[in-house]
Length: 182
Image (cartoon, rainbow, N blue to C red; front, side, top):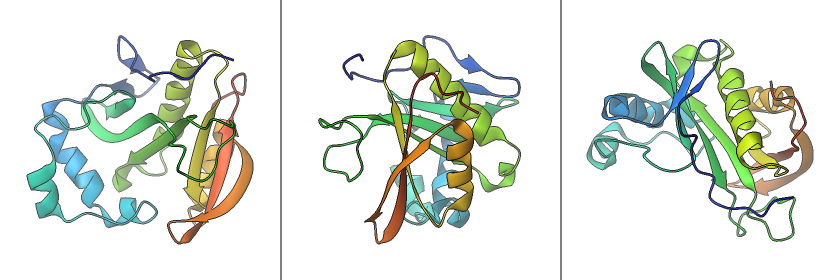
């Protein structure tokens, strides 16, 4: 297994049948604000943030960081996929030294149920497997978020444990390379 390092971003956008996973651009700012202000999106991630606060805080080009991919459908941002390192202070790990890659995603409610999350996450996992051979990926979601748990299983994540965090029961799973994603 390789040692964990920066997760990076592919040198070119990732393309799927319907989507493009790319770096964020200034034109995505309104969609980022909509995503973080949405009560539906915020249900299992700590709640929606006030729109006026987001208008002041979100930079001109939001999400410009390693491991964040804008999910683009026909030239418009519909969500994001993230691959970050899970901090050692957080509960849930599969490596004694922690620092696993962790998959996250958020999509605008109007595109839920269309299969875009599965398609985007599978593409990100495929890129990750090529860029970080032998390294597993973890995912954590509230057990109350049944859609996210179904998607995790569909992507090939296997449940490792459940625990309390953020005042809710969490489902924690791992994706091992070689597991078909999606």
